[in-house]
Image (cartoon, rainbow, N blue to C red; front, top):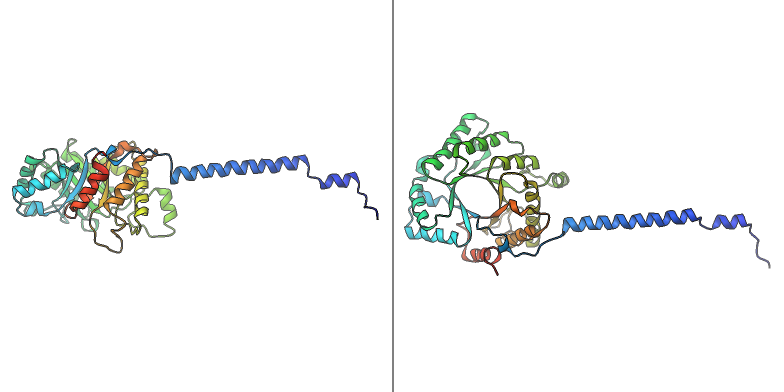
Amino acid sequence: MSLPKYSSRLLRARKPSTSTSRLFVRVVHYAVIIFVILLLIAWYFLIGPRRHEVGSYYNRNENAVWAPHAWVDQTHTPEEIRSFVETLGSHGIKYVFLHVGPIEPDGSIPPERYALLSEFLKTSRQYGDRIQFLAWMGQLRSKIRLEDINVRRNTVKTAEILVHDFGMDGIHYDIEPIVDGDSDFLFLLEDTKKAIGENKTLSVALPELIPDYVFWIARHFMELKSYLSSTFYREVAKRSDQIAVMTYENSIKAASVYQYFLKNQIIWITQLLSHEKAKILIGLPTYDTQTETFYPAAENIKSGLLGVVDGLNSWRSNTDVFQGVALYGSWYTDDNEWKTLETLFIKKP
């Protein structure tokens, strides 16, 4: 039986043309290039180039701690004050947010609320003259109507009294929650800085930063009540000397996730504020009471410090913006937590 004969034209039709082969190779070539580029982008943002420095490399001994109201309205012996101050000094604490509030709805703080402030400052400075005590003035935003110019004036006047009459080294505002675009809060910062002077520190507590592109995605999956835009964050940084970022109570249940979260906070904030006035402190929790939004096995000083150092080691971070860490708060911090700070961040290996 003879095989069927095919015309040369038909044979040529069944054979892939040279142009089709070249097109296929070109498509594969570009697909590989795009895949490699996407892989590099993913590596850069998820891992990225990094340094390998230990925590002490980034310690400037300009860390901070929130301190309780008891120091200014209860009697303490000189020995108790000395012990407190020396503990702070030996762990690189420069800034103490000393609670003197809360702020009254009219912007005032009754003097009897901090009746022993002068005595505390006088004694503490005998043992640690490097430490700066900032008046921690806090209140719920809903209870202080900053849109009322008289309330703002009273608040500024209170800050001025604490700095100029009592000798505090600055003001730490912790008014929560500040909402995005709160221009009255920005006016308060402007007026306060003018009142206390350039040589005094104006510090502000803010929630963690969520970059605008991350917020755009995240808002489809969860409710974000304390979101502040990158623009507003910069506006606060222009009007203050220091931002203490409250990077805790995020409902994170795994220490590794909290570490990764803080790594990215460092990267995002130091990039954002590279050309602004304020320096940042990263707030770390030292309390251990579990709530619906806080899991101490995950969010703690150890995982927090590891995340901070990891973030500072990223080449994407601007370490000049970073000032230190801030512990919340001194009344919770035990010997083991002070030791963790010392080991992971203060002492050179």
